[in-house]
Length: 228
Image (cartoon, rainbow, N blue to C red; front, side):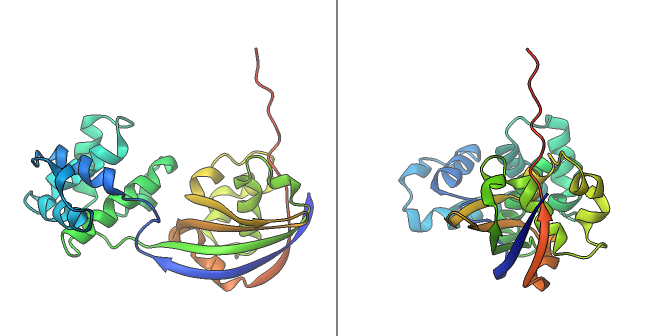
C-alpha cells in the first residue's frame, strides 16, 4: 500500500455524458428509423431531427430502437424488448446487474428523456477532477482500481462502493472498478502527482463532492499471469 494526498478540485452534476452522442450516432439512428438521406441534414439540425423522429414512435418502440443501437448485440432481442419497457420507469444505469452496460443505459436514457420531454427517468451523472499526490507509478497501468480505492477512502462506510465491494477495496483484485469509472481522463501528470477528470454515475460517487482534501492509501491490483 502507498500513501497519497487526494484533492477534489471540482465537482459537477451532469445530465449528458461527454461525447456520448455524435453526428455518426444520430445518422445511424435515423437510418434505423428509415429516414431518407439523414447524411444530408445540417449538423446543427441533426440532433433535433433525430429527437423528432423518435417521437413519431411509441415510447417503448423508440426505447427498443435506441437500446438496440447502443447495446449492439451484447444482449438478446428478447432482453432488449423487456428492457424497452423497463427503461420507462427504471434507472437501468444504476439497477441492471451487468455493470459494463451502465454507461450505455445512461446515454440511451438521456436521449429518450430529451425526446419525450421527461417521460423517461432523468439521468444524472457526476463529473469531477481529482489531484493525487504521491508515488503515482501505481497508476501507470490499469489505474481504475487504485483510483476507485482512493475515492472509496474519501467516502463514508455507508457508501455503495463500501457496501457492495468492501472485499475488492481491501483486496488485490477490483475488476469492477473499470465499470464504476465511466470515463477516466488524464488532465496533467508529473513525477509525483496526477490529475484526473472522472465521469461516473451519481449512484456510485455523488458522495465524493463532500471530500475536499484527504490522505489515503491505495494499491494497484495484483498482476495475474496468463496461462499458456
